[in-house]
Length: 347
Ligand SMILES: Cc1cc2nc3c(=O)[nH]c(=O)nc-3n(C[C@H](O)[C@H](O)[C@H](O)COP(=O)(O)O)c2cc1C
Image (cartoon, rainbow, N blue to C red):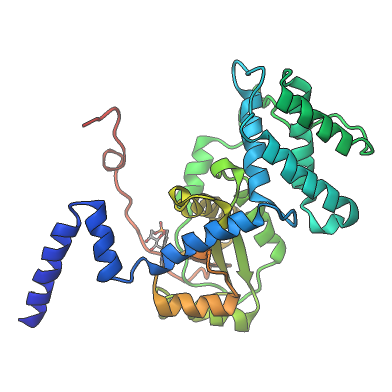
């Protein structure tokens, strides 16, 4: 009786709250803590993003984003005579800091990222037309690199070789997708790290917004640690003890400067996860994604165990290993095509 009453009140409040964004915000501010962690993560991430703007250590999200934008400007048809005026100064600033640091402490900067940035900036300054801002920065860039070895930029937009068909046929991919099923039972046999790295190498080629790749695969193959990590999520009851390897896929909210991009960590990481699963499957390994709902105790335990920062959000976990041939997998009927797609339907 009381339960029904509470349910009706909730229904009533939700009915009014859902009428507007403002009312919803009031509801979630006063009646529910469900979004606290996410809000805090986003705010913390924005702050970290601003703080990191002048820090050239490691991979730099601002540099990656801007070099990506320059690439898009360079491949535009027709290409503008002068473009990137609103972010070229910031780009050269980020690049210069990383370049200078790389001279004294090469290990502290991401060398591949710096090379990519060098090549794209070189090409940009070669083709960009005359403009006071561009001319000034062109001089700065070339002076900075005056002693650097001469090289033809190679990490720049290019034409793909489309003359030959892909080596994998549609039927091969379909067969792989049919073969992959969520495996929950594994042989107690170590998984060579090389196989995991090879799968991550495929995952790394996935698309990501502005090519930022704001995620990390935290791999656990130590038996004790694997058990500890696997015991935290709620959806693994009854089979978590048999995972030879568990991966915690982490998204990094500080990749972005604005709340509007807060969902990209989930999208980018999930696209990479799918490629990762397929790559495992091609190597004879099975896997199972594990849900990570936003639950306080689980979040706390995982953050403590992994030493996560507030903006680092768990996207999902992935258990993997050699599948036990005697372990069953779900039939998992998939939806038929008409339920999954439509063409040209509008309001
Ligand atoms: C984001 C996500 C979370 C999942 N969480 C769990 C989980 O907690 N426990 C579990 O046993 N399976 C989990 N799965 C696996 C799904 O149950 C499985 O993918 C689905 O039933 C379809 O089966 P299939 O993967 O064999 O096609 C998850 C899958 C995804 C994509």
